[in-house]
Image 1 (spheres, rainbow, N blue to C red):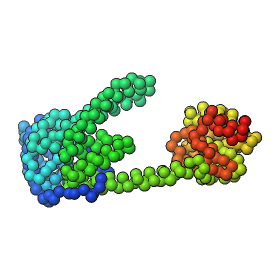
Image 2 (cartoon, one colour; image 1 turned 180 degrees about the vertical axis):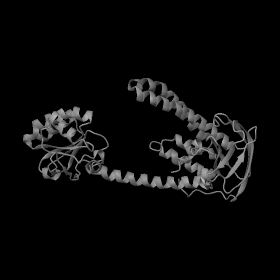
Image 3 (cartoon, one colour; image 1 turned 120 degrees about the vertical axis):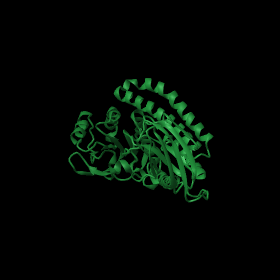
Amino acid sequence: MIKQTINLLSFFLTVLIGSNSFAQYVMPTEGSVFIDGQIVGAENQRIYLINQNRGGIQSPIAVAVADEKGKFKIDSEIEARDYYAFALENGQSINLVVEFNDSITINGDARDLLNYSNIKGSPDSELMSEFLLQFRYFKQIEDSLRAVVMSDRNKQGEVNAYFTPLAQRFYSYRNNFISSNLESPALLATLNSVDQGKEWEMFKQIVSLLNRSFGDSPTIRVLSRNVMLKDEQLKQQQLENERKASMLSPGSLVKNISMPDTSGTIINLSDLRGKVVLIDFWASWCGPCRRENPNVVKAYQKYNKDGFEVFSVSLDKPGAREKWIAAIKKDGLLWPYHVSDLQGFNCEAARDYLVSSIPFTVLIDAEGKVIATNLRGPQLEAELKRIYGH
């Protein structure tokens, strides 16, 4: 029986996350495909033609049994031109771009079908296999080097020096592959090599090209809808981030923080109106925070008599109450305003103040309005000297 995991098929299906406004080709709604060839090592075994939009591995489009020499024939009706997987019982597979009435010949080795296969009669399938082979090789190197660094952090520089030119060559190859095959459905294979966080515009452009070349494909239709939804979500998130960021611009009134102190008593930031306050996001586990603490203590000792206060918000995690309290004592954090709900970065204050890393500080005036953010050491000292005149 075929294995439940077909790696290459899952490769391009994982990118299904553009616009449906692109003109679609008017294509027939059904046709057939003929596939034959020989797979060494698959003698007397089943060979499957699979489409994820038509039942996946649970309901293959077609099943053939190879003869004693590994030769096979598949002659099947298909409902859509789309991306299909040619899969063996051992889970090895290659992806195919199947058009109506295609006649495709596949010869290969069942031990490593991607590395050792030859596809004739489907140029787009050949292109896709070519790219996927290069991408798999690149990812194998990347994963092995990541394992080296995980076992020995001191090798980070050496690994970077070795890996950087390899990465540059691969991404140059990828970009050239895209620009050389703008009209090919094989571009789908490139999507998993695109970092959606950093290269979202490129991702959308590739999907746009796929809409034009293969827009009637069920896979591309699903991909396009999901890209459109994600793009809208990203735009809404950007608007929300801009709205929140404006809350921390100089002169903006900050949100109140209401959280329990070390004894469980609820403390409000708003209770300190009338004083200049440094809102200090930190945690007992945060090395940079602990190294910055002496500077905050120094500022507090010098300016507290002038009305300066510190309101510390710990982003310690559940179960770390004793470590939080111990860090306060060890670092000599003299001020009484220490709060935390022990929810780490999930606490409401961290979300309200857009805290993505610590230490992070917000200096507010007597009216609760932002003076500056992320002041540390000499910067904090200089700002307080400007405010208090000494």
